[in-house]
Image (cartoon, rainbow, N blue to C red; front, side, top):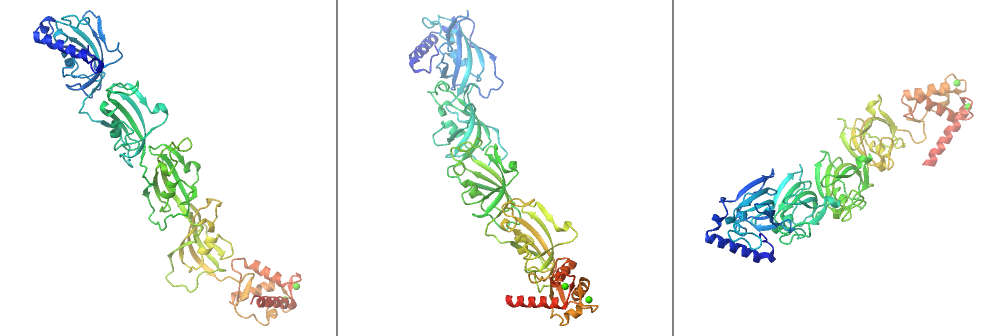
Length: 577
Ligand SMILES: [Ca+2]
Ligand SMILES: [Ca+2]
């Protein structure tokens, strides 16, 4: 009995139904079985969760043991290793079973006592069921579904951010645990150590999963319940999925992309003063955290405590990053989502990036420059009164400056010291970019200088300055004075006195020692007739001048020595002309 659902056994079912009808027609079944008028139902195990109860017209799968009153077994689905799968409540089962299954939950266990008039009546089944037999069934319900069912989706965990949702044509990677409706597991991606990777809506999946994955976000967890006609139907699948089985998938979507995707850029923060955007050919320094779409980290520049430094738009990095870094500003924070065809493809790389993985980079752009860049000069303020002369090569200047990296890391400030800095422009005393940026300034002017590394500390950097770093200066010109021609220690503003030696020889003894020479030169400077090389201790400069004049190094300049020196200087001027 109850062997329905299996094509080869239909004739038996028909015979049983015919007998049942006969018994009813004769009006004997209800009288012959004893006192019971209806099925007695003992629900001896009711599961805590019962999302659905059996109703008339539902399709059910169940196991049962059938015994007589004396405990003798007459039938068991367990013995046949095939459970019952049939529509309930429509007369395809004995009436007692049709009634006894109503309202049952999956995994519920019932004991049914079926009087003969609701079973096989006064005739019974030859060789199997004697006449007027009351039947006892122990039933466990395994599955229930209905032709009107659709895929049931319950969202178990929704990630806080959903960058995109699954659509038809997308390629997804997900993990799942698959069970039958009663919880029996049949498959798990976790047991295989990798995600299940497939296209959605393209016929690669059972229809129920094609539907159940729709609209899912990376990182989302769902329970997807699929009726058998949207899964493996009447055939089932191998030994693990029986015929007419509902399937329950607990799905974790790892990532999603479409083969048509480009790198997706989401700007998270941009500094207000973005005057320049990165372009192909620029050399960029940036920090990044790289993760898979479900948040699993795979790499970070921070862990190496060093920016990632590269040319962009030139094929040195994965195409998705080459695209995604363009147009960024210094200090900008971007999320760049790179599909696998613009990253590491179907094979992945290393042991952290699986095949077909979408990569998500959180990028902080520190700086970038082009090897052709000059010093970037921006005047912040000028003194109210126009200046006639600006700083130029050879000038001796005093200036204040702050120096920092483009990310704001402070490197140096002359304001931390009492006096401003001093230098001679063009004398190779400071980095080239600063030297250039200090030229053409009025005293009192303030400038902002952006100095690319090839005009600063180059690829190797310097103390506190990373290799290839762009530097930011704020400079203020405090004072300037004209320098002297190269090699000169002192110049006259007008023609030197014709009685030069006599003027120097203060005590008129025909010799000029250092003391007299020093007093004389200082007097010329004092009276504005000449000036000394700026930026150096005057005593040292005067000492150097004296030693140049004192040809025989006896500590005294004579008239002859002075004459010789001035003739030589004269000649040099002619040569230069
Ligand atoms: Ca003298
Ligand atoms: Ca001498």
